[in-house]
Image 1: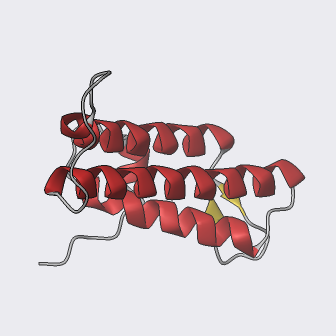
Image 2 (image 1 turned 30 degrees about the horizontal axis):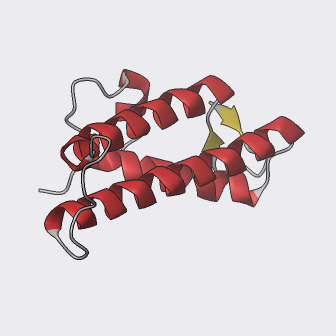
Amino acid sequence: MTDSGSGQHSLPTWEQVAGLRDFIHARTYAAAAPTIRINGELPHAPGSALARVAEVNQALYQVTSHLCSELYAQLKTGSPGLTAGVSWKALVSIAAVWREDPELPDWMRDLLPIKPQ
């Protein structure tokens, strides 16, 4: 982890961002697998459960990609600002749902807040 300079946020390395991005994208793809249509199949009925799953997965994929892009841009400057810390915090929040996933990188598990009982 790198320090953001402000002392308020501990920021990840470029490789850690990529690793977490790949993990989240893999989970969104796996969750969306039942919604994938083969060439020639009709679209899912608007408002159906499968259509909504596909929409939610696409939204999560896009949000994750956007946050990572913002974080990469900030890290590239060599002097990341507040946007970097906020983007990283949002990515950590997204990853928290997979706290118990055995494939979650160990370094990431250590960053997640303790699960409330």
